[in-house]
Image 1 (cartoon, rainbow, N blue to C red):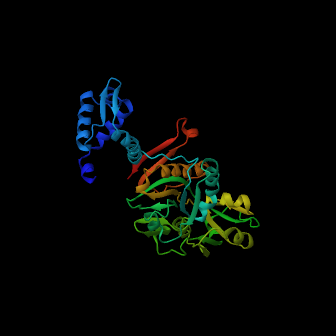
Image 2 (image 1 turned 90 degrees about the horizontal axis):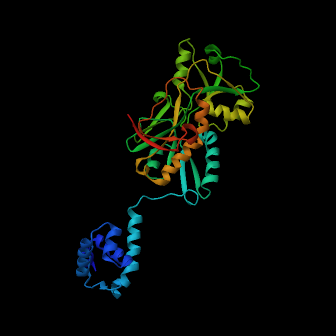
Image 3 (image 1 turned 45 degrees about the vertical axis):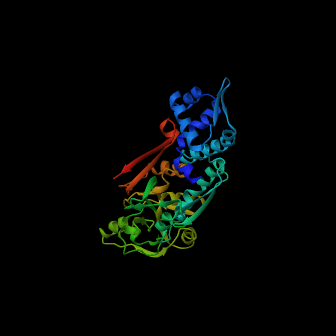
Length: 361
């Protein structure tokens, strides 16, 4: 059997399948775009390899031998399997039964995941979502190993093996319990406030601009623009009073309501917290840099149909954040280094939605 396979050209099986279906050398050639002589030559080679006549010419067309009849269903199935193996895989979200894992901060969990779950429930009811914390110091390794399909956060200096897509951008605001009446903030009044800061890995004063580095991936760990805060206060000879540093946002509303603490947080988070908690939002007396929040994934999955669909869903789940932030963005944006995958919604551009892949230098 091995000897036969070594001598067998797969194209001969394609000819065999066509002749079996059409029972005519002429029509078989037309079906697979070969001349009649090419089909006859291929049949001759196949007869030689298999040691069987396979087809006998009769007034009623090419009649298969017993060997050909036995081979036919197996060849047809094998050919279909080959076409499936080398063809472009399809992904049908409505009946797909699989799991996606994302690594996010609680900030992203609060402002994006509810919308994401709603989209999944309507469009892909059998898909499960696993949400992991992005505060782990092994995030890049988890993406490398395929344990995380996508990470969402603010990234810089992205290694070539990763790809990224911008989701939304946001600046900072200050929030406090509604019992506080701070009025319009000045640099001087800001310096007198006790501030709670969010740092996903604890205090990171030794790191430039609040970023941590791991395996070629720089990602933001401080959830506010510390550099802008310190610069604004230092010009007036003041310094910020960071009274407490927290690893997450979930305890923040209670602390703000029950104490005189204030906090500098991303604008979308302040809007979300203010809707459900007794909190008031204040504009800062300086311009914070607009932090670009995006999704990161491994380059090996870029052409995967399921991954492409999931990236689209993530973009749609943050569309409301892009709309709300458009009028508030101040300063320059943090740039992504890598390949960006931009989603073009139908409602925005008046044309079919789709993906545009481009290279950002």
